Length: 113
Ligand SMILES: [Zn+2]
Image 1 (cartoon, rainbow, N blue to C red):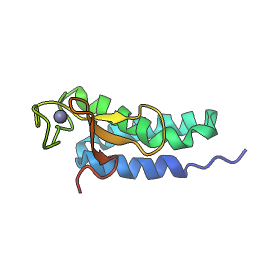
Image 2 (image 1 turned 180 degrees about the vertical axis):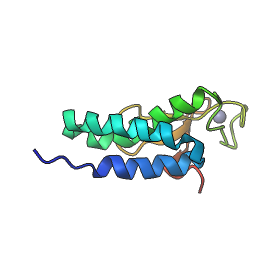
Image 3 (image 1 turned 90 degrees about the vertical axis):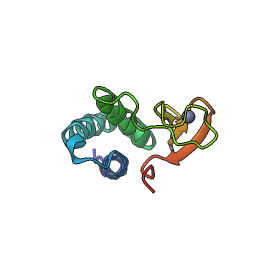
Image 4 (image 1 turned 90 degrees about the horizontal axis):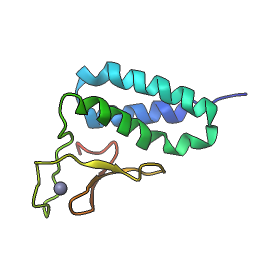
């Protein structure tokens, strides 16, 4: 069976852009390795890889910085004081979302512009 690793590589690049810090490269590589295995087991899951990899990365960062990435939704009363989260948990086109207001802030991969 031929496995297309493309989705994992594309997702890794987008999540790395959001992390914007090389100190997370090792954690991101480990998460990407796991997701390559995961897509092998479930090729139909390719569309979920970006959101899952972003959640993997956020979990790793939260070991050090539980507020990453900080909310910057202008209408949020707690802007800068809580982390954004990925929605949907499972599905294509994941977004960083302010859970206080329910508003999307940026697509995964575009947190930094
Ligand atoms: Zn917020």
